Length: 165
Ligand code: S3P
Image (cartoon, rainbow, N blue to C red; front, side):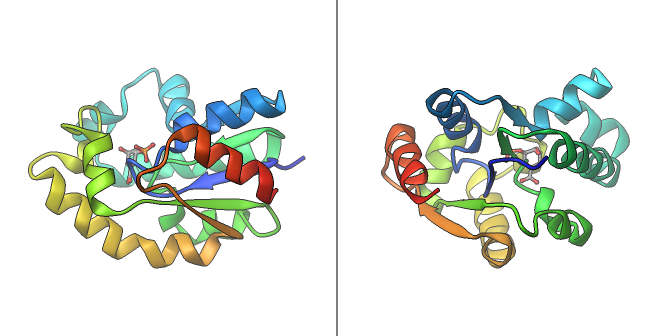
């Protein structure tokens, strides 16, 4: 079993929202690795980062992605940093992966104050810029398709993905 599509991209790309819309449109279940980590640990992601560190969160996230790819046949949204681990990228081979691309201004607008996103504590705009610069090539390397999200509604993005897949 493999997901029908995996959504990757940075915070503020709209992965969770678009995953929900795709799941509804296709009538398939939706999974989100952030939600999986929270439900398996019973802890908030911000608490895991602060109390146990980012490396520990990445271990939990890698395990959540591996389980979802093995078990889930619907829509799967990954946390923005999940593809940083090479072993996680390897798991995506052969699966349709959509990179929801977003530019700095739209990402900043969508994440607002960054509540619940530990990597954005401090200066949201400069943190997002650094993450976009560092990770865009990684998202591009795993993506089978790239969909622009700047200035577009989640419905519009969902329609384009349905046309592509
Ligand atoms: C992160 C993105 C978050 C969450 C965690 C780390 C990242 O998920 O996994 O705060 O490294 O980009 P979203 O992309 O769903 O906000």
